[in-house]
Image (cartoon, rainbow, N blue to C red; front, top):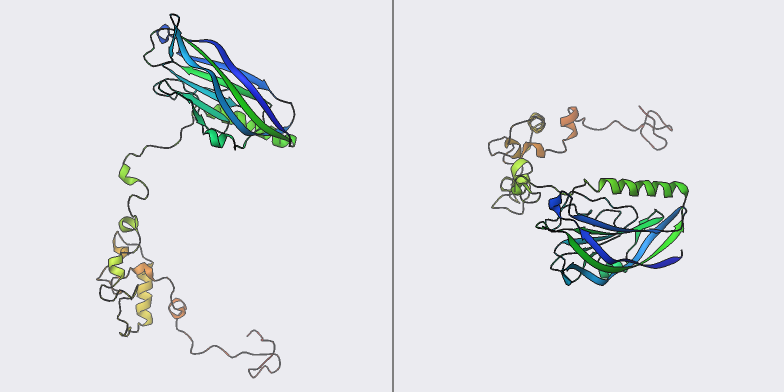
Length: 316
């Protein structure tokens, strides 16, 4: 697969961010489209780097001062759609860096002396982001500050380095890739990740649910005097009393009967003692099917049907 390298620039001119008091959103977008070779290709972005030839600055009365808004820079295979999210209270921010269509994103804030990048410098030289469109978009979104009260003129200049490889794929795979990227572009405007807990104490892992709604009560299952006897509160030399079939059936009936909370977790007053009724997992065959026969029927073989012996066993 051939590796293609390119350098593209954006800027070196003045951008006017309008005054929001005029009824226009104080957002300005500068975009550049790069056409790639047409065809059914899958391309993988390999390396990316961003360099500001002229760091963003506000031009006012012949002087330059730091731009007080936020600038977001994107490299995407599809046109950018702004969202309803904010960045440092600046409205109409671009999509999050986690979106699949975002191959590279950089954010420049008023107090920053360098751009915050995703992926960061080390990962950007080892990236492997696939895309299927035969185009790339370089987009700079200028978000005016929330207290803006006049038109802002911003001057900047940047250079983007990219390297990618491309391989021929089937037309079906290429078409599905293009459809997927366009779908990702459209839903990025309304996508939200995460949720807010109404009660932070209900966070998963914050409590042990077995003590609240299910499970075994360890204080009932382990004897304080014989800790070595787990699940069986008997001394090592103490004989275990034999249970009749009727008693075992009663235990099984209790284990399969719905009761109110917290009775299923074991009570001292029940016939079994502190072990929960539902702990009866495997029952003796005689309890399930009746009395156990004293012995199994003898095998009947082909060599002598009347006497047990060797040979092929016959079904009786």
